[in-house]
Picture 1 (tube, rainbow, N blue to C red):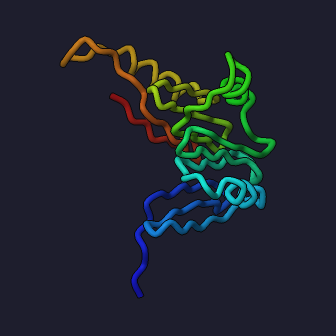
Picture 2 (tube, rainbow, N blue to C red):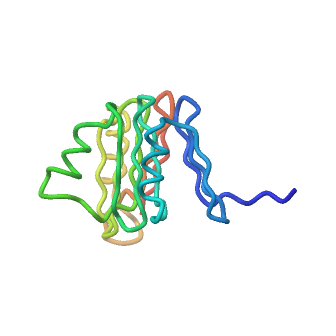
Length: 158
């Protein structure tokens, strides 16, 4: 049997996942409200799916920059940023959530924000961003952060 290759995979704690395949099909395991969210926005392509620290917590970003989230575990700082801080962010490309309340946001214009990080990760990012670059004068920029169990993380930067 020929299996379709996945084009997007998101994995969360508590065995939650979202997988999208080349043929447009998607499979997921998570809270019921995730199915409701995906059904309500079935005409939009998925840009990112994130699972938070609680079973019911998720955040979905769609390819047009719009988004939806549910759950009591959505960090308040994140909600303030996207809803209350200077208006309503509507150009998101990615949101990630971690199992300890961590979060990361990236927008289409290249801006990024993060919060809820451990002191160790905050220091590592500070050291990375403040270190001199040998090749040119441009400062380093964090492109993406994803969070795992036991304080693990993946960080990419320019």
